[in-house]
Amino acid sequence: MRPDTDPRIRRLHLFRDMAQAHFADLMTASYVQLFPPGLEIIRQGDPADFLHIVLEGSVELFGQWAERECTMAVVQPVSTFILAACIRDAPYLMGARTLERTRLMLVPASDVRAMFRRDGEFALAVIDELAACYRSVVRSAKSMKLRNSRERVASYLLRQSLLAGGTPSYTLPVEKRLLASYLGMTPENLSRTLKTLEADGVKIDGARVIITDRAKLTALAKPDRLIDGPDAVATSAGIGLPLSREGSG
Image (cartoon, rainbow, N blue to C red; front, side, top):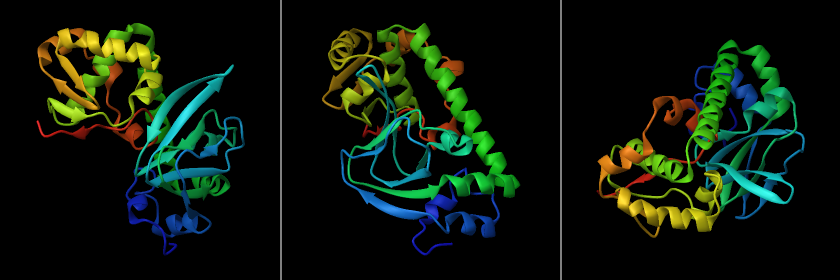
């Protein structure tokens, strides 16, 4: 294994069960690179040359069409992206840009495909991760199509609280403009929606979320395990938004 390989990578679901010798071989041609904030590191439609692993910082995955843009996910350490394009040797369906100073490990996509054929445990992990990502995308599509904007926002805020251990107060893990884009809204619509949710048991103070009446918020959100999950594997594979930072209560 290369001396600059972060040991956290080995513990990722994608790599943890593969043979040590095979993992070392996969890391041989990989390298770590530091990127400044606001840099586009992947252009939508370009060939998938590398599997990216976020070691420090954060990366926004976004889609573009007809001069419009939407946030697809925000990836934080330690997570991979974009595995499907690497395995299929296909163009990236999303672009990627750094949100802050970010350190990435880049693993050549050709080596990932070769190891998929060589190491059975790695192949199983790839299949498992891609399946989890597919299920996460289905969940997201169901939420977008079946819920109105108030229900989507309420569901997101409630789910973040539950994933943080049920805390009634926490900090949003991303900027509101990114959250709005991820939920299919404009920043102005998100701001108005957040204000209307005060009557439904949640108050926003800057980036701070304070749940004042969990029963009311739950009644609006109507959490559903077949939509809201979570899928733990997908969380480490660059799908969706990162988990909230637990508040002090």
